[in-house]
Length: 119
Image (tube, rainbow, N blue to C red; front, side):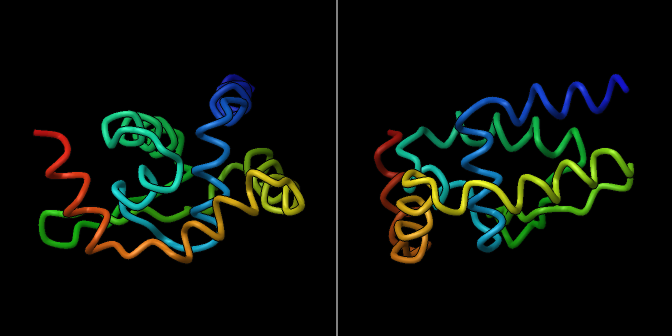
């Protein structure tokens, strides 16, 4: 029960929910998510770390970059909740906008651009 409550609390935060919905569309790099949501890469990394800790997302190293994707949880209650989250919000304007932005984002452009903006 404690872990389920933690998942509810974690995904109750708007930016983490938006990240979850983006990753439902396709795996993405931190820089892509940051560009779409208008957040810093540090903020996105922090949100992704929290989602990874709960077993909701996984990461895969690709050289110096890390690609994130959704992970199917093992606990039945959390699995049911994640299934529910995948089905809701498809008509939310913010989710539609985020998905359209993700389709237009070119990883090589935004990652380079965000990296140079940090210094």
